[in-house]
Image (cartoon, rainbow, N blue to C red; front, side, top):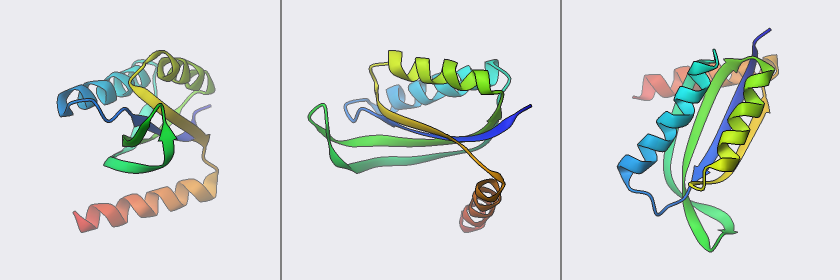
Length: 113
């Protein structure tokens, strides 16, 4: 059974725009190759972090909302851990209320664009 997930990861700020996009596409491809369905993708850009990590105070934030089998999450997180460009990541399983909120937020954001 496919579950709904949301993952946010922070990439190191020393990357160029092309390197950042390449890294994001790497993880997007990893998900789709494993049978995941990407529902929403947001790039939040370069943001200041609440505290420094590895002497860095900013990072490129990226959000994926997707449907996947539970086994895919382990493979995704191993990929995050092995990639030195990823500073932090967090993946959460969404319940039905969070899914409804995410859909509403996505539709609202599309209207603004």
